Length: 410
Image 1 (cartoon, rainbow, N blue to C red):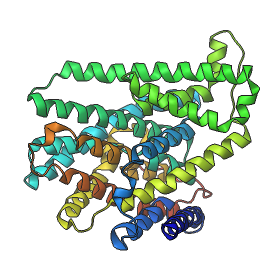
Image 2 (cartoon, helix red, strand yellow; image 1 turned 45 degrees about the vertical axis):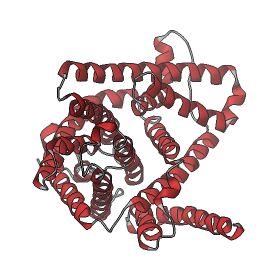
Image 3 (cartoon, rainbow, N blue to C red; image 1 turned 30 degrees about the vertical axis):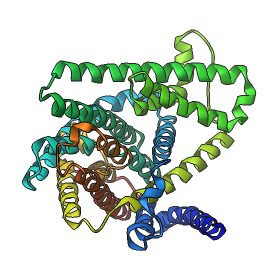
Image 4 (tube, rainbow, N blue to C red; image 1 turned 135 degrees about the vertical axis):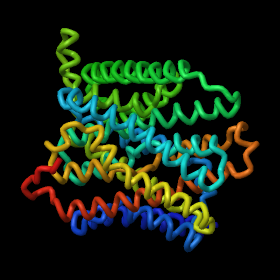
């Protein structure tokens, strides 16, 4: 027993160290650290079988929630309101068209492989978004222009909402064989309003509390617990946790304008020590999230891997055309920004979590191959992350951040 504990601790420490080294590797070789972490997970999981996916069953939901919460918080806190207003329309249109296109592609592939169309559409809703857990870290590493970064950050948050609402709606259709369009639209609108209200109100209250109780600034774990609670409240009140946290962090980063609007004076800024704390926690969660996804892959199911590969390839091929269709001032962007927008197809945390939740639904018991959805989802996550990582590497080499901007050709 003691030797097993020591072995587990050794593996734990080695993963953290490798995660740190992988960030340094990105700076020198432009190979994204997320790809290295994912491959480590594949190595210690399905290849060497040092770790079993069953080991993560009990705490995976907690881990996933923490990772998503802090990644969204760190991504939203630096978004300025003026930049947000500029990028909101683009992000909304891009996210909606990308979601619908992804659902169509996934459904078509699933029908081609003789799966029921209902399962195809359901899987399409699960895989219809981009992953905040991939998009936000990559944008930071690449030092992308603020407006482009905001568009892509908003897209990843909005598509999470579409995926959740879409998957739940499809489950209802499978159960009742009817579609209530009005109910779906009402649910979407309500989720946005509730999430926005809870997030903004929480930011105002939190900022006020920090002014009245200065000792909170050094109570980092209290801050962490508060952020997670806000996510949970957003979910519990029929909103969306991701949008709630994004609203909270954006409002917190623009709290001076909000209090000026309210006729009061207040301003909240993360202290350097707070930034370091959240950066370390985010790093820790990011490392284990991507390693965890690699461990979950099952390479014995070659047939399902092929399906996932086809879906990832088709989405990657279509993405540049969606960007060209929805981003009206594309010719004003640099070639670097244009390439980054076109390569952001990675699924991740939301898809992996959603498919696990969906598969326990009793509505799917009548489908003989419903369990295939989990491995297809992980396969798509793996290949989409691989494609995004390779394209990021090529983009960074061809259009480095310190080079003179190259205008995009329309």
